[in-house]
Amino acid sequence: MKSALITGVTGQDGPYLAQLLISKGYKVFGTFRRVSTPNFWRLQALGIIDKITLIPADLTDMASLLEAVTISNPDEIYNLAAQSFVESSFDQPLLTADVDGSSTTKFLEIIRHLKKDIKFYQASTSELYGTVVESPQNEKTPFVPNSPYAAAKLYAFHISRIYRHSYGIFATNGILFNHESPLRGLEFVTRKISNAVARIKLGLQNDLLLGNIEAKRDWGYAPEYVEGMWRILQHDKPEDFVIATGETHSVKEFLEAAFSEMSLNWEDYVKTDKNLMRPMDVPLLCGDASKVKEKLGWEPQTKFKELVSIMVKSDLEKWKKHLAGEMFPWDAPNFAGDRAFIKRRN
Ligand code: NAP
Ligand code: GDD
Image 1 (spheres, rainbow, N blue to C red):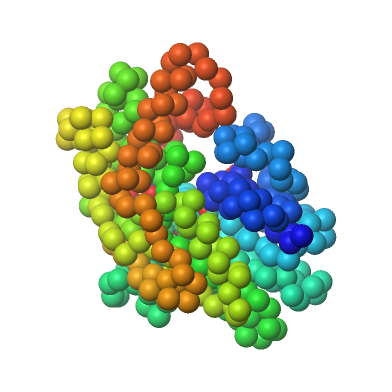
Image 2: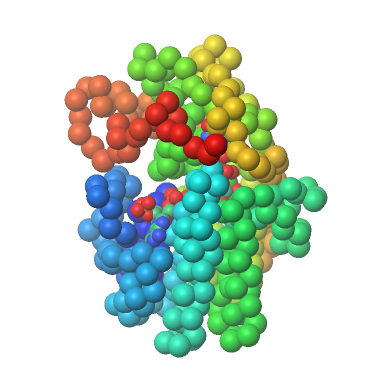
């Protein structure tokens, strides 16, 4: 039986990947970090919390990573853990550099010293393209990062490539474009919108504050993207791959689709707030996933409108159940919401 170690198993992608690997007969280990309030709701929502082995570890603590690798003795490591919110990387640039950058070297060093044949997947990102120099973006498009998050991830991208070539480690980068789902964190724009639309429909919220609604993203469906991660590690040699839909839509288009799903007009509810604008943003992302299609047979299935519909319907169902008094694992009731009492940057 193959075994896999997933870092960041409490996030959006970790549980979907764990579910996929369990279905393929893997023994799955996942790292979680100590927090003051347990946050296993996604693993509970997918019904897999009892099917994986959880190991406490923090990416800033090398000893805990060594322990995680020793306990799990994995054939494959999926390094998904990260400070993944671009906006927070402007608030906490040094933490982001450590967690999203240096921690990758910690894993690569562990592999180099312990067991060189562990296959390593690094969660790289389309955010690396930043000020895009060509469209669509593929594996050869230059990286021009626009955030401390992207700068840290750029380091991680290159260190993986460097260890691959220097030490023959099976280290790969999945350059994944934005991918969303009902398990998406509430701070990201798609889930912020789907959650707000559900609440507005049910009379629980009156308006929605957003930042740059002209930004364009290539949004795909997370459960399909984790299949791409797995395929990257099953390839006969370590290579880097773009995973994307090839379609781009603005935040405004997401708003139109989400509100019209509930027969509402977004312009009646949405306001923009300059406090929600980033010091630098990525204006447009659109991926070219032809390499992964050709070499690994991976293709996206879920189209933009369907993705929006899945997310809005899921949030609506959850709020309805909540109002009916049902108890189930879920994040939204605990969310502090937007900035009224949060002060960022001078
Ligand atoms: P996510 O929902 O934010 O999950 C991040 C995970 O990392 C959580 O389990 C979090 O733990 C954990 N984590 C954060 N800091 C940590 C630390 N210091 N030590 C240990 N664990 C830590 O992110 P995601 O959407 O699943 O994305 C997975 C990965 O893919 C990330 O590396 C992200 O940067 C990258 N990526 C994501 C996308 C996307 O569109 N989703 C696209 C490209 C790349 P807590 O639950 O305790 O916070
Ligand atoms: N979060 C958020 N909140 N974003 C907003 C808002 C808002 O109120 N208003 C406008 N936006 C814009 C952002 O400025 C950005 O241009 C776009 O919506 C998407 O923002 P996010 O959903 O926060 O995602 P992201 O693109 O910055 O980052 C995500 O995708 C990357 C891959 O390209 C994250 O998952 C990263 O971890 C990932 O690497």
